[in-house]
Length: 129
Image (cartoon, rainbow, N blue to C red):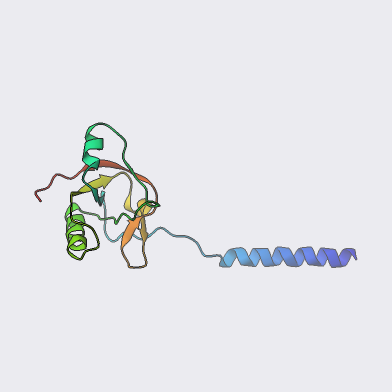
C-alpha cells in the first residue's frame, strides 16, 4: 500500500515537472523600431485636464488605444480611422504616454500595437492640424 502511494506521488511530481517546461511564456510584444517615446491618439478634451495639473490615465479595459513611436504616425493613423468611419470626426489629439514601448504594448489580432496596461499621459503634441 505504501509503495502504491509513493509511486503515485512520484508520478504526479514527474508530470508536474514536465508540464512546467512546456508551459507557454507570455512575452512582451516586440517593439517595431527603437522607440524613445510612445504616442496615442485620444479625445482632445484631455488637454484641459493635463494643463490644469490633473493626472490623466488611459485605461485599455475601457477603450483600445493604438500605440505609435512617432507623433506623425499617430496622426496618420487617426486621420485614416476617421476617414474610414472607424472613429467619429471631432476633436482628437496626439499625446505622449509615460513608459517604454515594450512595457506598454501588446500586439492585437490585426497586427496593430495597443496599450496593454493603464498608463498616464505625460503631455500633448503641439501640431498644425
